[in-house]
Image 1 (cartoon, one colour):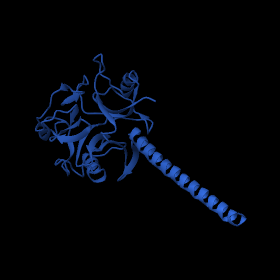
Image 2 (cartoon, rainbow, N blue to C red):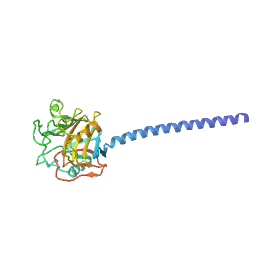
Image 3 (tube, rainbow, N blue to C red):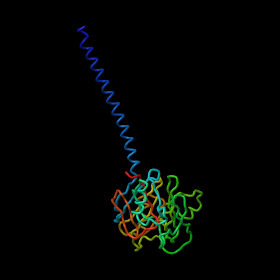
Image 4 (tube, helix red, strand yellow):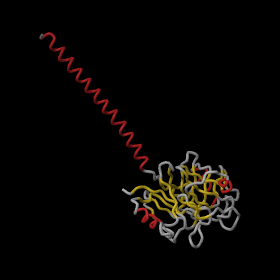
Length: 272
């Protein structure tokens, strides 16, 4: 028996070692799968992608969201019929439902009473009708357009083309002028224009991602439109407003304050 004891023990030891290695490898593989799942979940739970960038000498705040993962909403009036007017007021209303803003900015032009200048639809209710005629100011610098959201999809569409759509969106806000129309800049933008202002706008990439931008330095329309088309790769983009443009970003620790606003667009999440 002594002749067989050593190889027998060695065989058992080797088998146990190999079994232990297989068990360890299986556990490692399982941990990698779980880590992958957790990383994916974290990415989905963190829709905010706001960052500060300097492009062609101008500073911008650029926020990118997937409409399938981020809860993008429009805000005009609270349940009592009073206009929100500020990011703080929107946040106060959201907190009552256990929610909070991740991001927000002003979402289109408005009259003195803060009612929308053009088409405005929120949560399936239309509050202002579409405007199609040329008029004064930036809004009337045709073509203008509409930012719209429906069933997890977002778009920016020139107004007359939007009228041909059969689908009525859940949320929509009209503003103008269009910055980029099917890959082309608005025909009335001049590269040498001296009209430089703080501006904000929105574009939608071909993959569906929504990109909101606020310039932190005064820029003209041509430069702002070039940013959307050439740097952000949005074939369609819409000017929302200028001078009064403001931004809320939890990631950037921004909560711009000023005079009361009209329509506001925001991304909402459940409060922690």
